[in-house]
Image 1 (cartoon, rainbow, N blue to C red):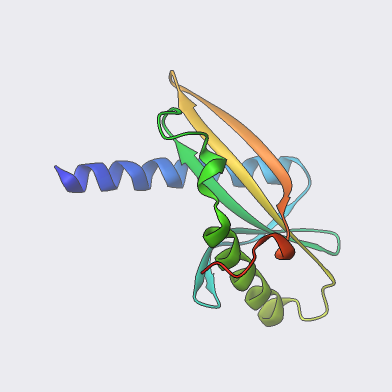
Image 2 (cartoon, rainbow, N blue to C red):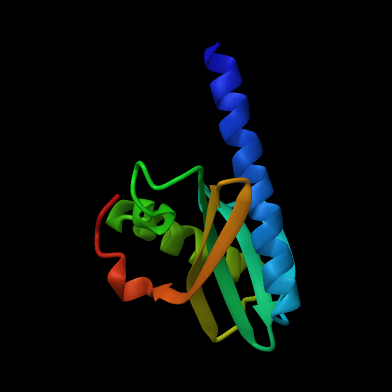
Amino acid sequence: MANDHVDGRRALGAEGEALAAAHLERAGYRIAARNVRAGGVELDLVALRGSLVVVVEVKSRRGRGCGAPEEAVDARKRARLVRGGLAWLREHRPRARRLRFDVVSCLHEGGAWTLSHLEAAFDAGDAGDAD
């Protein structure tokens, strides 16, 4: 029974990530990486648009019982994403000058998805020393 719950969460997350990637591509981004590890951190999506590199955290939920999906990106998570994003940048785009951190919130309610793209949801300075 517990495995069904975990499998259901994974499926929800995978579907949310696929929807987020499609949304970003429609908005003119190119997806450079999905579910990649950098600096010991898993990055959901890394997208490119011009000289901009965007690390995208995708949060998917089935309802608001635990709050809005984007609320799960707390200071500790932001610090990890900054560490991972900077590591990815060093490895893949060493001359890039612009790095942004976005959150895509994917909410599945009543059989329908609602996506919210929070551009520049936080920056490296917002991450603090939490980890």
